[in-house]
Image (cartoon, rainbow, N blue to C red; front, side, top):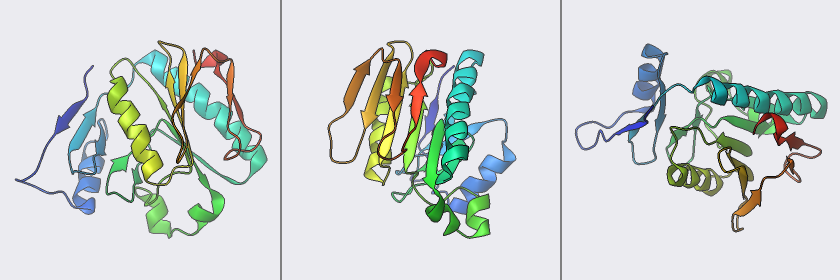
Length: 191
């Protein structure tokens, strides 16, 4: 399956409300929007990727339930980044106080903030360089920790503000310190 990018400019510049309405009217499709206003149409994931995303979110939710310092979001959640992009990471975590500062309407629509933590699992339809650029975009917009999991190569790229990307080869687990205190992702169910 292929991801398609549609450049709508200069013919059309979608407002946030129009983008929301397109997403609502096409619930069987997954959209993102780049900071440049490009509409990105992403195919649904295959079974293996969907299962691995679920395993990832399961571990994060178990930790968050015990930690109580924030909320976990799955790949269906849209985040409106400060640069204007609308992104949906495979998993995300937002500190509770940041979430509580939002209005009910903001919580019910695309969340108008950049998550504190994001994870992207590279699926067969994803291009590595495009996903690496998306990870850097998260960091540039306020994410404090990001993991790009490349199952095919069994690598985890770790993104942090002001630091070079750290690459781990075939790790058994990866720790979320200091952003996610006490969280360690077991990669056995992800590989």
